Length: 213
Image (cartoon, rainbow, N blue to C red):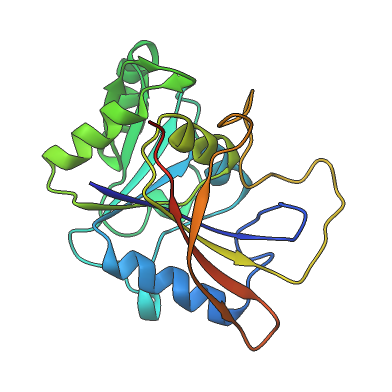
């Protein structure tokens, strides 16, 4: 499976849907969704904002999977468009939380239990499940802990990142990639594939991930 992490970040590494990127960045995100079979997003992103994972023109591509992962199984549902528009999303959670979460969500979502992995739930198991549903290209839309775990498990093939000409400085704002410990020794290496300058001063950068030996 081809796994792509996508994000828009300030120059100090802070992220936030709709708060950082320009309309051009938004269009690139929607195009990336149109090219892939599924999106995977962390529960914290759902808690902070109201994502729907729509494609170009605000359309939900037919048959495309929208997935959320939550170790605790504690998800906001009321008022969240993810559960009220389009096909029911797929929710990955722990074996402990799966049964009660499935009861509480009912027809609003499909719940799948995952085993433990290196930093929480096994993302490799989540990808195996998605592959069984026919997913060949996965778009990971964060947040920071999910991005970190995907890199930590060595699952990511490429990174699409928009660097916005902005600084946050807010130590409480969510980070693009956040976890315990370094991802390499001390870094995980990336290879530059392309870099384009946007009209608003953004940099649209594509990196290939150097896989761990």
